[in-house]
Length: 306
Length: 252
Image (cartoon, rainbow over all chains, first blue to last red):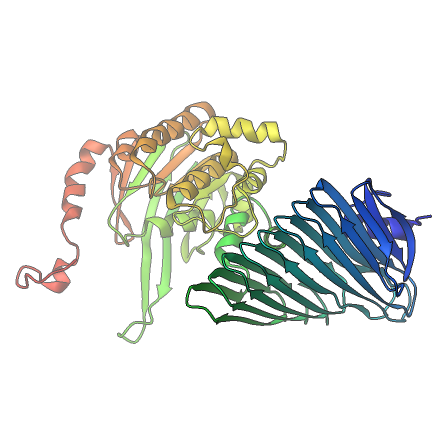
């Protein structure tokens, strides 16, 4: 059922050696390849047949859902709408990811629209990896949208990674935080060659006592360019922080625009942003431990994007 | 084991006098013997850190040569000098993002084996085991990062270890164990040790004390002989230029 290319893509984007344990839904070339539900996690195709609805029962603990997408069909642009309902007091991990293998000069792409309704006091960890490979010269495009709604006391930790090979990426992350909820987003993007990546983040701190931390780590190699927009809109007593660091290698370019809006006198918002080459003291330290210049560069980038 | 021959490090001054060159290290000739403990001291700006950076290869030699175990290492890169057995503990260690103490220890020791890394931690003794997975980033305190820096240097098992002000930010209770640790490394592994410090604990532990002033070695010998000179150096070295005797408004 899974060929060698499928297995390699799944390994890269979802750390899967084969079919996972627990609930999963694997989509290949725009169609369902395999699905499994568990006692507490249900997965069903939506009414329009354009995506899935994942429902997690209240109180579900330490369970995970894998929903990888793999593409290896020339000329296909796959759009999927996925909806996640996470019940109150649940604590679950959702592993998504998209791997594109492009073997021809035809373009291939995927747009994953993910919406999360996180119930009261529920905790969700969302891991998403994007990767493209293959010898073909067709453009590989990934345009994910993630919308998160956190109920009172809910928390979401999201790790969004674009590892390499993606020619064009236009990401939109939106979140609305209820009272005492917590959102942590870490985005890591590596681009090379002529690749372009844009990430737009709109975080609304609506409830009293809500907290959000957005961390962005970008590495631009070759002539690639990344643009990062992040807005924290504080509408209540809350805490928000944006940290964006970009490392430029070769002729890479970066634009970073963190934006803070305080609409409440007790809002506390901070941001720090930096763009530059690898710090020379870091390189010198690793070289003084016996690494060559190139090994030191790789080690620093590897850690930065870890 | 380490010979500094007629060693100079010269920088171009961009100062008001229209430029010109200045010797930060001003013709040093000295031989460090195998398996001895050296302390280098001297006033701020006397060239101590510059000298250490010349030896590890961060600063290029302007004139003269550095001979390590009979090989002229002056043209070698930092990496090659590290591989030859020279290690340097930075005065202000680099802080990373996403790199842990374990990562640095593994690079220095050349192994990722957890038992071997724990063995190094126990050997070094001054870092609690909980440090192992700490990120070496801006969140570490000044003292923590100096302990980590010292542990990494020892983990590399160097033939020559240079420690640049290892006691900066270190609590008083750790300084004596630190001195004992360096002496033990020297006794067990014959690690020739050079400590740059103003701290009496290191000066007392050293076999040989070097006093650097204005890029020159003005004294080498035991502590007893060094004391009068050290007292002298406490006197302001700017007196000639600011004529402090006439002008009592000195804020240095």
